[in-house]
Length: 254
Image 1 (cartoon, rainbow, N blue to C red):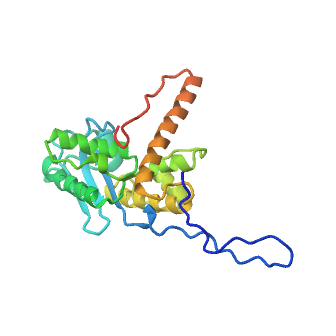
Image 2 (cartoon, rainbow, N blue to C red):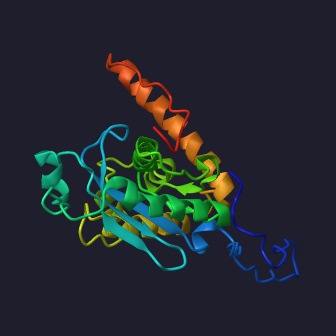
Image 3 (cartoon, rainbow, N blue to C red):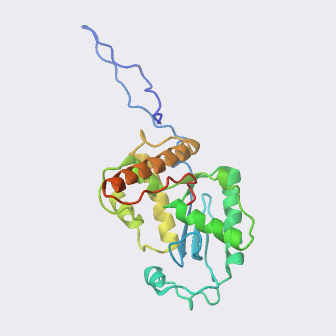
């Protein structure tokens, strides 16, 4: 991908006797790169891990300009004990919370505003959260933003793209610890959304010559990394005699 840095502000040193090298300033970083701009962030806690069938229980939509949206959602369906054990949200906690259609309508309107203003949206493992939200919108006949114009920044994808050889888990808490980003309470929507946004910025600052400088180019770069990761997974699966994964052509959706 193109180098995001600008050209040096002074000419490079010239060789030859009798001349002293001129001072050369390091390349200046483009102040308009996406990780230097205000970013929004989104996270959900859910009834399970199937984005097409499971339901949203809580949300945190952190704005680029203040006025964050956070709330609880009564999905009208049972919450599996295995899920409640992870995030601590029970049916009793949601008894007086608004039902899905009422609770999620403002979140979708918020996304529409981001699309109109061309603001980057940070979502860790975006293909899960955005697929989940789109399924909820369809399920409850809610107005949807223009998903094709949404500018997504996914630290989960970027982390693999810039540091493929690192071993170990790449859950939000693992990656946050690797980059020194504080995560006070994992599986709390607001805390996860904040940490994801800080992670995205940290990755951009750490790898300015790797990540694309604009959000539009970053979208294409993330799609490339998703395809490359699938190819790598399939290569290893083939070596182990396991089934192959169909390349995901719909990112940031599953």
